[in-house]
Length: 455
Image (cartoon, rainbow, N blue to C red; front, top):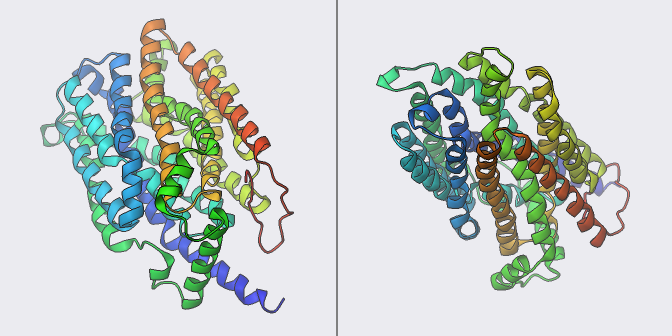
């Protein structure tokens, strides 16, 4: 017992320092990343759609073509991050995407919009899986759900704070002689460039190089992560080529890719079309909203989603990640989103959409703790990038198909039923995956609650 106490104390302080020093900064990068990615959803119903004469299908295509650009360089970008280090590669990504995002200020046609959205995807390629990989390389698996949960808070909070910010910037119509939506693009792009420069000096690639850790903390993290990686590979001499083959031929990786597809399909259907749906409330319910009213209504589902995400990941950390931590929210989201179609008021509709948002965001950080439990090294870089590629395919598909089906059917009924189907499919596949790879799990110990799910 006496030997364990110092080790437990070192573990607590090391994880706390990583949580305070790295997670908020990487989460801030993600906040800016997601705001730049979804800024087009605020611009479209507030002048851009009219100025560029966009149909719903054209807007959906413009939203989704981003993901095609992302897919082109997804895996190569994550492999480059693994080779050159997160500090250099994430900083490079942020600066280049900030520059491309800035160019949206002067877009003047649908063709230019398509081109810039594609290039934005190319510039951003690898950021999200790179951030997941980076944080996963700093903490052992039993702490990973908590760390990724704190990181993932940035995504719903981007809309909580970003939607009112976008609304306020759009309200600055005429500044520098620009339309309001162009002013928004100008000011949401600059932080990415600044953060990219700061990241070059602030981030550190591995615990062994962290001077803000004590020698004991550095040694403990390095030893724990090395031992964990050795257990995953079964030996320490795994070569990158073998790792890559293992990632690309793993049935588990491909199943997780389809599971993630379902969640992201729902995530971006909401992210890109919720502001447009809210704008449609004015005609549907014979009411009027100002730009800021629409911005605040758009933010409503995401604040409860952030709260649920926080407590859901804490529960998974304390009690051990289980299949239902991912499959349960998928079922709730899959059943709730079609119900939004049958609500009789804006309040009821937004309330049901809030349930869907809570379900999606509760599951995502827990989901991302799974791949790094059986992948390491180059296999982890490739596997995480492959899974995220499936998500990017879903981002394109949900954006384009939702807009196309809306134009074809004249309403959002069919598109939202499709969202429900894909989320229920994710639940089924997650349960099937757990059944095929189930192992006996020891009861969590009071000092260290291990999370060995889906091994």
